[in-house]
Image 1 (cartoon, helix red, strand yellow):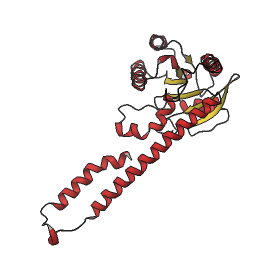
Image 2 (cartoon, rainbow, N blue to C red):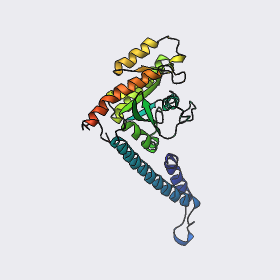
Image 3 (cartoon, rainbow, N blue to C red):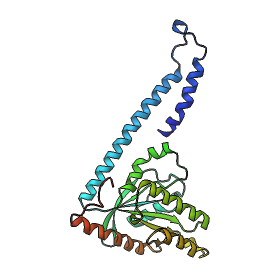
Amino acid sequence: MTRLRLEIPRVREFIRLAKMGEQIGFYGGGEYAIEAYYRYMMRRIAHIRRELSAIRRRREMLVTKRRDYGLPQVALTGYTSAGKTTLFNRLAGGESKYVDGKPFATLDTYSRLVDFNGLKAILTDTIGFIDDLPPLLIESFYATIAEVLNADLVLFMVDISDDYQEFSRKIMSSIKIFNDLGIPRSRILPVLNKIDLMNNVGINDKIGLVKSEFPDYVIISAKAGIGINDLRNAIRARLEPLIIDRKHGNSKDFNPID
């Protein structure tokens, strides 16, 4: 849909240029093929809009049903190439989702029931953040963003092996995205990945930056399996109070469209 919408101005200009100098009535040039293509584009955009609306409704219903069954929602998010899918595969146990390390290797949400050291929750892998993502593209990926909005806990993955300037930029840019989406930091758990690639130079500065913005964090290597059990325990500790509230009928934190 995004590609089609970006083509609309160009197609309109083609039509305008084609019709310049035409005479009206019988001596006109008739309909051009580009005009038929323009009508096709508009029909296609309308069809995709309806499909996206249907996807949003299905996902909202799915989130509601999961919560009715008492299943907390955990969403994996963060910048592309941070290792989200690698961590998803490890936490889900035996999953083999495609791992590329390039933007949009993950093109849709993917959910599995995962056991976090005795506590079961739905874990969802999502599309990574991209700098300066065009508004038209954000609309197309709204269904993925919705998974983050509806999550009881957001695992915010960051590549700790990045140099400090890049690490800081991604942290602050992501915080802005979370603020724009209305996600409180109490629902976010930073996961600092790729510790196996660090040489300990500047690690204290990076951890200090994270501690200044979030109440807690976990350091792991999704690829090497370092810190995975600590992450499972941290997720369980975050979710247990929410489950207790739910059992006691306190649903203020569990609005499906929170």
